[in-house]
Image (cartoon, rainbow, N blue to C red):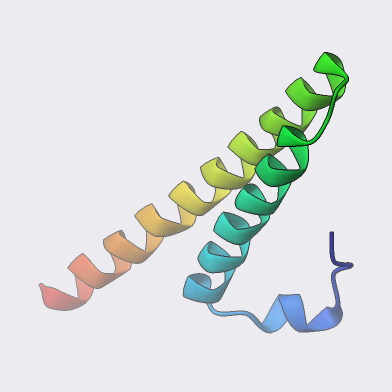
Length: 70
């Protein structure tokens, strides 16, 4: 996994959403290669949390866009 940098703070919500989706996918791929069931479960839990963060951002983007239309 990549280390985070100060540039992360300047990301747009859409960029953050994409980054969290990408991290979730990366973590799931890593989990698929794990033999230890506890480690695999932990990685899948982490991936689900990245997806939850992305879902939250997606909801915020949708809410912002709907406010702009009204």
